[in-house]
Image 1 (tube, rainbow, N blue to C red):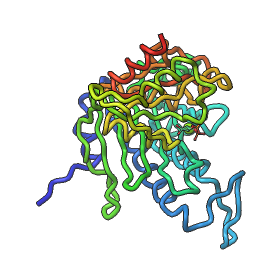
Image 2 (cartoon, rainbow, N blue to C red):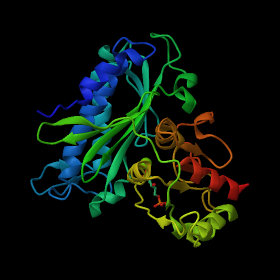
Image 3 (cartoon, rainbow, N blue to C red):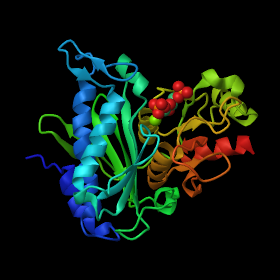
Length: 334
Ligand code: AHM
Ligand code: MG
């Protein structure tokens, strides 16, 4: 008989690893897992129902009010966090301001802050390409019952207590860390459970995949241009030329590079001085996972996890992946 371990079982087993092991963080992770399954169901049938409004709500053939999937995903995650009762504040890519949850009875004593990109890379849905959810969890600093402050919400990446992503791909996977390694779970649709499939994930220290939107080449800093040329040059000793792979869906690009080894780069450009990706719900959680898997995550000048955020939707340049490859990019930038 095949023995499987579900996400729920795994979380309970690992509960003792958490510094405040009262089951609250376990429940929060479980709530995120449940919302992920609901979002997965909708993402999977995106091609079937006419759900792909491009601007706000739209009406489907049944006359039902349909929402854009990223708005739908946002609602699902917030609703799961609200009813789960362990989260006091959600910062979401979909919300200009964060959402305070302590006004509802069940979340009154909640101790965790969640930053989330509910459906990253959502422009890929209409062409049936993988998309993802990215999340990051912090413990609130203020006492329960007090008003939340900026110190609760704008925490540095090193203070994350957990982070993860869900990839809605050819299989749907949930990958997360609580600072004790990275574990990956694949959704078995026949039983509706995430099952441990990738225990203790490690990113290879070297690789030959570089992921960057080369269409922006002319706008890149000279060091990045030189690194791209380096990747393209032939050299037997270093296994070059490298392979260029860029999906344009961060979770999918990161997931592939995590498994195979590689570097993902979204640098600053002359048009976007801080790059495109958001610190709080894209770069920090991915950086936590990459570091926990043995890789490296930097802006080019600073470790991503050490940046003190100044605003919810702050952008930062990002270079993430296999340690040797990231170090090589840094060499070109210096
Ligand atoms: P989004 O949050 O608006 O979906 O944008 C984030 C996405 C990432 O998933 C991806 O890595 C990046 O944008 C791609 O951007 P570009 O098309 O500029 O290369
Ligand atoms: Mg995004």
